[in-house]
Length: 139
Image (cartoon, rainbow, N blue to C red):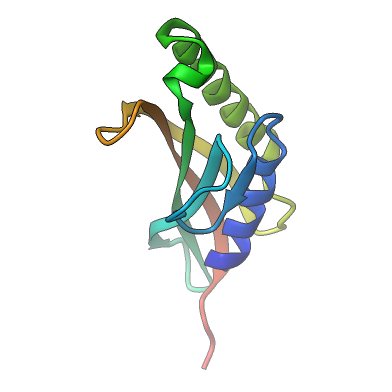
């Protein structure tokens, strides 16, 4: 379930126009920018009744942008990062149930921006919560 949903989130992020590649892990040596990667962060569960549980899976989407110089300065780099953040949030919201019958909702919980200390890149990070219903395992 964790991997299946992660792959569906990767597919949604890949459909954002100018993202060069989307992966299921951080890259050590990127071949193009901007690229994104999706990782599973964790999950919580609570009992609804004797037959079902509500599970919330949390994922992180990281977008590593081009260097600020490549985006023709800081002002343009900031505008570009804001547009990408909006595009990613829109794709996630449009995904609704990721095409899975047990997914209740997909919610972009938080989007943050930071600056890479080792380069002049802006890094976007989206936290995404996927809420689903699952049966309890029967022995």
